[in-house]
Image 1 (tube, rainbow, N blue to C red):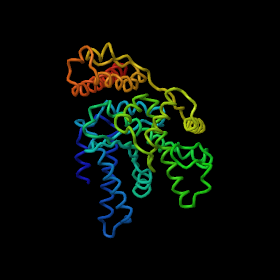
Image 2: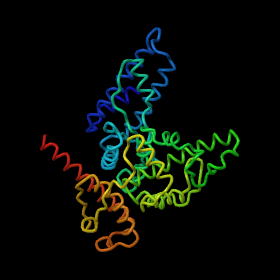
Image 3: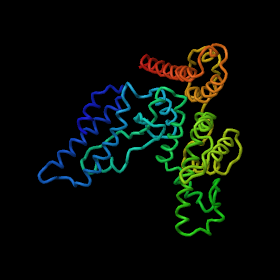
Image 4: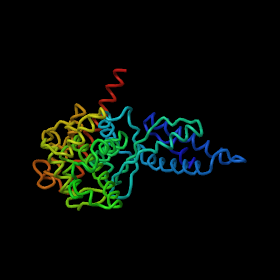
Length: 359
């Protein structure tokens, strides 16, 4: 493990924060090895085992954060979306996985506290670990679920759903589609009630993440679900696709919805931003329609690229027009994603250049 961290330390990340984070993990690992190798050992074996398990897990996401694999453009957009919800910049690390799933994982806060208490070493970075399929690493329009996953991170970090359960107990609503209505909960056994409580919490978590995603990438949230998860039935872990679509439609159209109202009131009580449209729709026809990248001028346009880009891709995929008519349908997916990726990258380059000039 220490050898792997040493190799990672030699990897060019172009991020001082990541470099410092790896340095802290190396110090912790060396100290752990030193203490458990001493005679007698000066650290509880169980503490050492759990610590090394945490470090191993953290390194798995660092291996995908190299200059050759990290999806910089998507990470840039994710970091920008998180700015209004976190007290400090995110330390985003990535794992490129050979599967079709997206997921996030926060570092175990108990591990960081334990290392400070047991070893006297403060690990300053707090990683947001995201995993995305290898085949999508350079397809930003297919990385739209990462905004949903960021919603899960924000929820976990700011205790949003937990707060909603205190402010709006499951027994008093709002009712969630496909689940036992709150009015009928009294008829459940104690065991059934515990299961029901857990399902309500998980469904609220999914609804919040959907709404968070929709605030930043608009109808692309629903569009992606329609393509890849069109008719899922209600489950203990997730609401049905139809219930998710209905909630998203209400959010898009600004219609009153008790689930949306619950989250807005919870966010207000916690002093957090409300869920609302955080992007500007952009007209891609003059640029992307001419097979050129759009010039992004603001963060709101950056987020708008995802909804507008998704709409553009779906339209051209089905019936290419102008220059796109001469591109094979299967290639249109790659070309559209490449142009969106270049648009974000150009924004990153201009921003870095302007910062260097102004410094």
